[in-house]
Every structure is written in C-alpha cells, then in structure tokens.
Length: 209
Image (tube, rainbow, N blue to C red):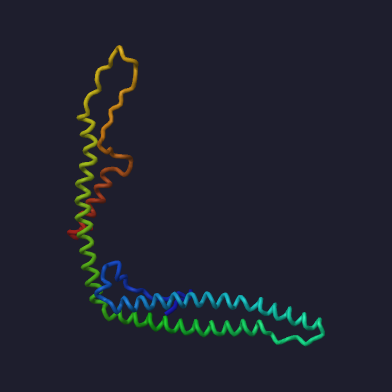
C-alpha cells in the first residue's frame, strides 16, 4: 500500500467536497483512521531517522569514555551510550513496523469499502455535479445581466452628462471637471471575453459545455 517513495498509495473519495459525508459515515470514519495512522507513521519514520543519526555521536561518547579510562590506568567500560542508542533505534523500528501494518490494513479496508459503494458514489457525484452546475448557471446568468447593465451605463452616462457651461470671460482661467458618480468600467478583459465566459457558465445548468 506504499509507493516507492514511502508514501501511502490510497485515493480516498473526496466526500466532504461534494457534501456526501453524511451519506457514508463508515467511509468517513475509515478515511479519518487512515489519515491519522499515516500521520503517526510519518512521525515515527522521522523519529527513527533522527535516532539513527544519533548512533554516531553515541559511539563517540563511548570512545571518549574508553580513552579517558585507559589514560587513568583502568579498563575501558562497556559501550553504554551506543547500547542505549541502539535499543532506542530497535524500539523505534518496531513501532514503525506496527504503524506501517496498521496503516496498510486500514487503507485496504478503505479501498474495499469504496469499491463496494462505487456505483452509489458515482450516482451521488453526478447528482452533486448537476446541482453545482445549476447554481453556477443561475449566478452566472444574473452576473451576465448585471455586467451588461454596468458596462452600458458608462456609455449612457457620457451621452447624457450635462454640457459644460459657457466660459465666463471675466473669470480667471481654470479647468472644469465633471464627475460622474456612478462606477465606471476600468481597464481589464474585453467585454466580449467576459460575456463569453459568463455565457458559458450560464449554460451549465442546461448541460452546456
């Protein structure tokens, strides 16, 4: 159940993404169990790597203790630090093997359970997809109408803006600025491109592509 990189090779169905978690409580529980076990397995693997890296320093400590004893005219002591480090490594290896076995077994159960419900899952997925398309289409249709009104209002505002008053020959020269309070279209995609995208989305509810 693990690939060549040591990662868990399982593909859980994204129940929550499509709002199906309440229909498949056993699948939800198995997915959570697999995720929790795999997280613990990864942590145990990291711990084992760290403990193995500590073997070298432990040997150095034992060598230093042996050298010190010999210089003092004593026998070199047993390699205490290395023995302790090796025991921790063996314990971590046992723990990792157990977690790997538990994770693989849970992942296998999850795969079997998903296959058992594959037909229903695909039906529910199709239904959820159709409902999502309908919601997107409704919102896109509304946005398409509002966008058209927004862009058209810019041209209408220019046409019906009051004309500038005639200049007062006695007044000092100054610039006259007319401000349209309505929001104006800003630089961005061309109108046709925006309406093409919104039009595409608005057709989703009718099965459009």
